[in-house]
Length: 143
Image (cartoon, rainbow, N blue to C red):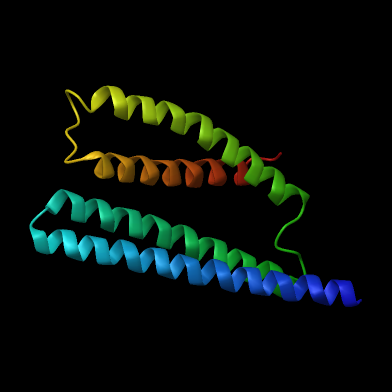
């Protein structure tokens, strides 16, 4: 019984940490968007808003689902959720390699980045979006 209570307490703590990190990332994205809009760069500001909204949507979904599972007595991480995460991460990694290659090839002629940090930010944002897409796909699919 003690192990079950300890697991439940650890799961609640993990859910709170996920929530806090999500809020900090969203606040940083919002601050980036506001700063970029104030400098007059509309495109960068819109990108920051899109990334913040995407992370907010994903964070709300994860928090609600985790909270519901905890109230019903299920653990946050079971064999299925670990398999979904593993498949999602591996596919997101593989596809993001091609995303990085595409950004590298297209940055000369088609996509013009201000500097390397802008290209890196676009790549990391794309990786996060790819992971979210694969996670939703594998979570809905029966594994």
